[in-house]
Length: 190
Image (cartoon, rainbow, N blue to C red; front, side, top):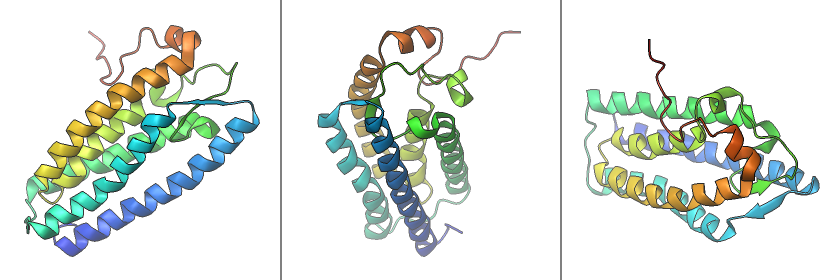
C-alpha cells in the first residue's frame, strides 16, 4: 500500500528498479542496432533526459518526506491507477517494438516502421506513458510541485526529442504515420 510515506518510498524504489532493468534492455537493444548498421542522433538532448528522469524519483521522495505531504486518499489511489496504466502502456509499446526499443534514437536503415500494438493508434505511445507517469506518480502521495515541475520540463524535452526522432525516422515513418495522432487516439465516429 502506498498510503504511508514508507509504502510510497517502496513504490518509488520499485520504479527505480524497473528503470534499471529498462536500461539493461536498452543497452542490449542499442548494441544490436549498432551491429546492424544503426545510426544514432539526438545525443545532446539524451544526456539532459537521463539527468531529468534520474532526478524525477528523487524529487518525488524529497517532496513527500521533506514537506510532509499527506496521502490524499481517493485522489492518491486514482493517481496510482493512472501510474499503473501508464506502465501497462509503456510495456505494450516496448513489446511491440521488440529489439528496436531503446532509450536512445538509433535507426537501422531500411527497416520499415513498427505499426503494430499501440502504434496502430498513436505515433508515440511510450511518450504518452511518460507524460502520464510524470504527472501521476508524484500525485500518488500529494507531491503536486514535483508533478507540475517535471510535467512542464518533460513537455519541453519532448518538443526537442520528438522533432529529432521523427526526423531520424525519415520519410517511411512520416508516410506510415501520416494519419496517426501523436498523443491522443482518435475516437471513431458512429
